[in-house]
Length: 546
Ligand code: ADP
Image (cartoon, rainbow, N blue to C red; front, side, top):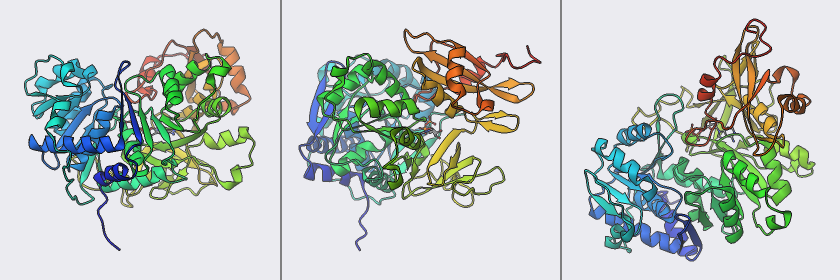
């Protein structure tokens, strides 16, 4: 057989050749929507690559972006990596100091930014001596006035100088293609460097029927940011299969997402649970007739556990199947995906939701296993939980800058830091991050299970559960709740609702109501902050403290 190198540029050229007129709809901001096609993306990505090379871009150079989901960001995905350089997507929601750390650690030489981040770039620029040029992602007439220590270029002018017939270089498939940093809720962020090979293999998974099932008949609303783990690999996978892409820009409000779904006939969307909480808050405010007319049939939820209530609402209100997926920056990210098995096809909906509320099964390419505290591998279905480990060709080997293999144990496993069990059917169930697990009297209580249960109450918008010090039990669960706008609920009502749905010794010892919960830059609950905030919380059950 031929040993052709797997390359990101070939994904794009395939889309340009076989799906040339499939649309890319880009909402740059509330006023501007740009419609282009895969053929346009390919032309402009070639211009970008050659324009950058004319300005000195070298193979392996890191090119950073601070940008929302737009057509220009998509062109950067292909143009930079296709040219043999490395696209480094930076999360603009991080604190400026973290962004500075990441840009410096990566040694980025170019920084492309959306106008919304112009002030941030001006603030950071003096302390980024390695950046040779800054590039504003806008039309020439919209250029911001900034005083920067090095040249400020315009994206469209850079493209205008480029060659649309540029020929992509032939690259070995292990060439590095893109770089993402974990959000580092503890310690400094760490870089994960992907390769052309890992990216193309991962794309096949997204397109596989029991992967995300992405295909040419899909119109995909990308509600997961392109700065978060390569938007779960969907930009590449969409090129592989020729799907239409709808890029929502900065506005992920329920109202806008619903409008895009309707206007663009979206069949599939992807996002973290918090995005969908906002979506349903809007959707449920609409009269029933106004909810009709969507073509949506699948929604991929990951990044945090998908609450059962959301899975149920998608099914009952919109007839859309929720595919829960689990993964992390270190796994590209797709690792387990929640599709059904033949045995589930006849299940009543309520039981099917239980299956969907798990994090899914391993897909070919990623091995998953759970190890107990003594390092023994648990069999599927064996009681108890332990640390989830993974290995495979799109799983990290070492963090950026470290020795190859240094992130792995002797058997090549990567420790995820998640606590999980695997059931007899092979579904992984994440019960906690190892640092969030609640240890009560020597047993573990899953904060995720309790949160999902609380969010199922109609008056609850969001919930977090943390372990609070308890003299007798070591730790007991404290439930912290944000009620829905306009809803009233008491602690007694909520606990009564939860009582019959969970083991008695798991029941929270106290409930606190707050206006908002802290989140990380990728939308996860920031439990370190909650633990600090409630460090002195006195539980009513703790006789010794009371
Ligand atoms: P961060 O940079 O915020 O750590 P990642 O996206 O890499 O971002 O986070 C990966 C972690 O997110 C996983 O280790 C896991 O704890 C959590 N996670 C991802 N998907 C799910 C899911 N479907 N259910 C529960 N937890 C999830």
